Image 1: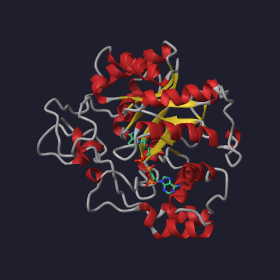
Image 2: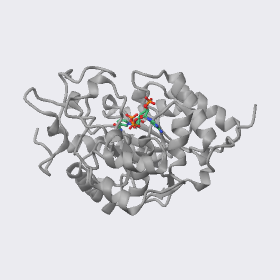
Image 3: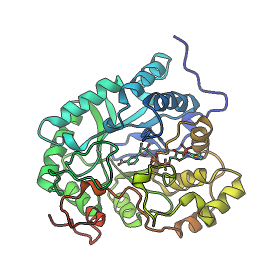
Length: 343
Ligand SMILES: NC(=O)c1ccc[n+]([C@@H]2O[C@H](COP(=O)([O-])OP(=O)(O)OC[C@H]3O[C@@H](n4cnc5c(N)ncnc54)[C@H](OP(=O)(O)O)[C@@H]3O)[C@@H](O)[C@H]2O)c1
């Protein structure tokens, strides 16, 4: 087997910034997203995982619902046989919404482990706080007749199983995704094992400053998805009022100064602000550029300030398919009043 070498134009993984979690473990401050959506096949995404590791990425953000963990597992096996040590990698996976039930968490985690050809995950997240199945790629108007609101008691049953995974040594850290501060407050109160991370939508036009501050003050590391504003997301995830981060004058001004694509500015902003962006791309020049951005040419204080000022509260992944009643709007999923939206 050929030795897996870092490309000449790659970045030394030791130089990539890290964040320290509540356990003391270090996680790379940028990861590669792997949701190929409708545009890229599992093989293309798996090839990108190998390519990304060859240019110096060590953090890969996976999920069972992305439907490509088996192919990514083959890619990971190749790089590990090629000489990259398992402990150098940070691999995240996520529990999908139809696996919250009693006993299902272990089944789901084991399936991800088998598919990814690993014997432990660095991080396992509950993908959404709602136990509601909908078919991948379904329309945003589609509703499950079994959809349920957030019920903390049920969520804690799932969390207890997540904790059991840590106790069994199958996962090193557990966390949440798409959670709000009111839901996290309850979890922090009742958890035996604290969530290490919360994965949430974060880009310059959707900064979620309140949730950002809440997570920071509670030692929950934030992982930011759609860090570039997911410019090529499927049409079903677009609405007329959505804004485009990579066309914002403040982003463009910094991109012009540094002679980089505006996407790179979004990634830089995320890393300098403190969340961990997980930009997706299957194109080498793009994922390499995103990684380089973490070690080269930081944004100035003035640029960081200008970017702090362009928040448009523009949530792109609204989650409509999780609504549990007919007369609701997607805002109900996000506890905007500061309390969990009543059932
Ligand atoms: N936890 C959750 O619920 C959740 C939800 C959504 C996403 N995620 C995770 O977050 C990851 C990222 O989200 P995302 O893919 O929706 O959005 P994104 O990373 O904001 O945007 C990805 C797109 O940006 C473009 N891009 C990336 N790097 C670029 C560069 N250097 N220059 C120019 N264009 C660049 C690419 O477009 P082209 O392909 O056209 O080049 C790529 O498809 C996903 O893959 C997934 O792992 C998690």
